[in-house]
Length: 356
Image (cartoon, rainbow, N blue to C red; front, side):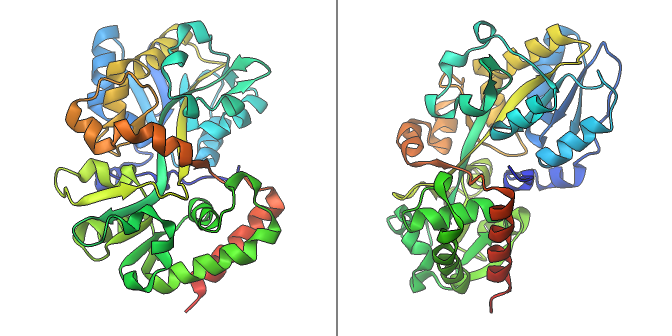
């Protein structure tokens, strides 16, 4: 997979978290737990209960995207890091580099995961598990239900309907949005070829013609939250759930054609000097309490991978927990193009951006 900017998922009330990226502590002593993470794992509400229970300090360093995380590892000494958060589909990349330690299924609540997000095809290599999915969600349609017809949001066709001209923001990340465009014309994200690009480009240009802006995650979320736009293409629970209390009109849909599924996993480093505590940390994150705290992190909300997450009824309602089995049936994974196709997809995206 190409480097996936983690910023596609940064949302929630803490916009300031973006400014803090990479400012957390680096490796400390082996007595501590040193973790390479996304910003949702830096929330004290998540870390403090584990630290207090184990008399340990969790030192976190945040990064954006798998490529950036692997670069940090390459610049570190063996043993500097104990655990890592990584896109589920990128776990294999870490295994190929000899970075991760196998995890025993009988020490993890694998059976509690939503079956569709186990991601064993990426997290299990040669019969050994090297990562466990901890959180997931969708790149789909975020919208203001007081401004648009929620029924319209049940189909991707609404994104090219002139009814919404000038009322749409498009999240500026080509893979998920091109995945949505592909689904709009009945294509499967896992089967895309160069021959599909002209039809996908046509959908993108129609979306662009309807849009007010194609912009980064914070600007696009702000546009939706402030009413500058009514629809965010590529949005989802990660955009709307964390600010639902402040703006209950914000919601997301998983259209009949589907949505693009994202998921993140936890892995343990092979060279960790504190493997027992690293395993305890993974077990804590995967516990019902840890899953609830991670799902509702101040940086961004997302669906817990465990069906047993100890969420409140209100939190479940905001995340639309009960609807997940239906959503997951329609969801498809991120496009995972070859290097050559990836370049061509980026060229199409650039053409869309530059179109007047």
